[in-house]
Length: 213
Image 1 (cartoon, helix red, strand yellow):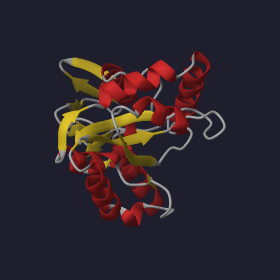
Image 2: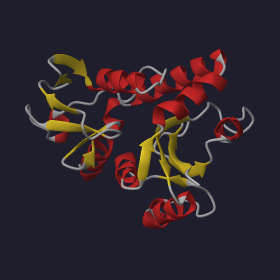
Image 3: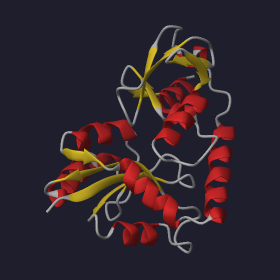
């Protein structure tokens, strides 16, 4: 029987992603358990979810493949770049269930929790508000790939500006648009966490270059 393998994020835990699985019938119950008010400061969000055959085997394969990025071997949290896991999971996907899972999240998330998610997202963005392409050696004309959908590619047209489908955006603004299109309701995301250049997540490129200074 097909089940869903998911990649979740939480604004209260920047830098971490959760990988797990659930059945379609139990999706609401699983989401409610994960976002229990006594367990986490704000609810989780769905970055990607796919219906797959042999979900147990797929989940185990992903856990083994990225075990070196698993701080606690008894928990399903990883510090791996999201696009790496999503790219692998797409190889097994029968269907993309991301929008459905996020819709279920939204249906069980209170207005107070949604406000808390927005607040946490804005705080995370503020911490990294000074991102510029020149600071990470990315030239104008460079192409950036959206982590959750490699078909979405934007072009750098200024030190803080990208172009997509003829329109100009800040990196965070375009990430917010893509997330909204996928069913997310949060605002003020950190754009560098959602795009990569030459295979490297922009936020990790920035951190790597800052550490080398």
